[in-house]
Image (tube, rainbow, N blue to C red; front, side, top):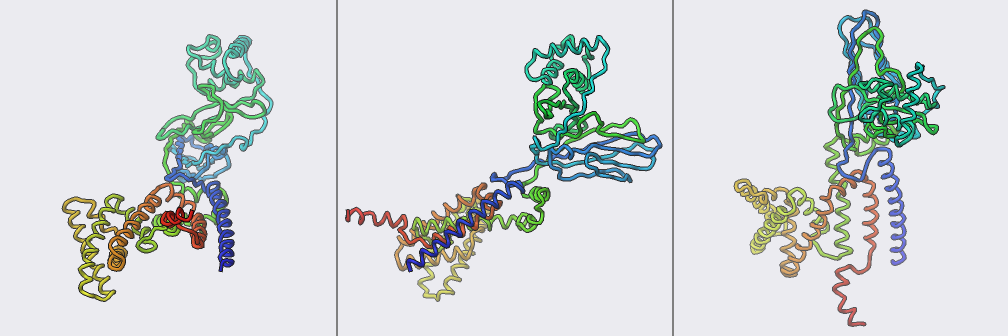
Length: 510
């Protein structure tokens, strides 16, 4: 028998080890490819960028090219759409091309893209070596001022690019900068001046146009930054501060001098952008992330692809194995006796619905009144089934009375009674009454108190948002719990309460 028990333990130990490996791999897979996290209520920011293009037709065939942000690889694209009445739409890699026959009225075209998950693209986005640097053509006076600016800029901190940008943004403006270009200038003019000055130092640079993701930002022009080829790689700089690096909330639409929108067959074209932020749960975004990772088929057979109402029901089922493990530990390791095996778990689930304090008070009232009624019924010498049925009916009547009192007196304690399982409550009353008759009131009260204590421990485990989230998001852990429970079934040692009870005997032997 002992040899057989060891074989079972070895077999279950192997199963536990295998389940831990499987759960670890599955958790890594979900975090890496589906975007899951261990934090509950994790939200993903989804940015909606809408480009509005307006222009006046010239009576010729129309061709509109709008730059797409997908070529920047900075964010993942959730969805794209174009609103253009009776235009032929061609979604190319770097732009959207719309064509149409000649038109007369003012045209309005809307391009919308939904973005999520800022991607660390450093070292991943192709950065080809720039072509031969074309130096600016300047007259003798302007060339002299340009070299004077480069010399003055050396007094600022940072590399060559950062120094020039800081000089251009100095307050009050430097005299040499004012002589090189007007004080009132656009960002585009400033960027082009910086590019020309860097060309004189044999540094290749280009403009970067993009959108800074700010919530509820509407009808604005794109932001401009500078990108320079330094140390065999492209580095981006803030045109206002000279700070190096691409901000995490900046999405690049276009690099170089190409326009964001090109209209053929139209004039006075204008493009304006608006940004809106929305939040989505990690479960809703998991399908999109799985699709990008070419794991759509595997996601389709997961519980996260089910309708939302079914997912909500499964969230409670996923926490049940952990509640069962708590009860098993309380009974088989700690050694407390309860009213049935899983009665504490059912009481704990009821406390989740009723509220902790109100639920305990309500439970105590129902059990107390129920035991008194059961004591009266025992004097009638009824058979077992009719007696339990009578107790069930009395429990229902008690709940009705408490619900009416709670409604009229506005007491949440009484209304909480409706959430307790009727059959289980009646069974606890019956079990407590039998124990009272056979083993005395002390043992009956001890079993009731132990059941409530086990229920309280279970309640604080299953009510924790982080634990509930982890058990639902990474439900492979239930397989690990299964083997732990089975291994606990092979435990034949002393329980904690037994060690305490037999401690005097151990002292006497010593």
